[in-house]
Image (cartoon, rainbow, N blue to C red; front, side, top):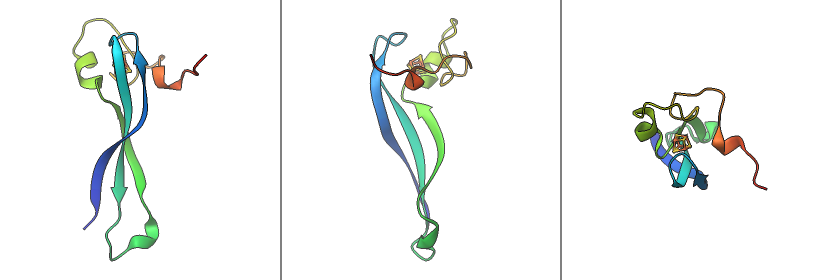
Length: 77
Ligand code: SF4
């Protein structure tokens, strides 16, 4: 049976959240009977995106309130 798990792929400080947040990927691991397809990433999310989506002010693409801002895409100085 195939298995889906959420895995942390990047952790960084988020000014909007006031702390560290994680970009997570949902990875689908194939059934043992058909292992040739390999693992696939099927979704991404921010570890605090659901909370941010409930706030009135726009935050970022991961909260679904600002498609023009992705804090995980910014490069560190
Ligand atoms: S959804 Fe966006 S703004 Fe909210 S905590 Fe995550 S990265 Fe920060």
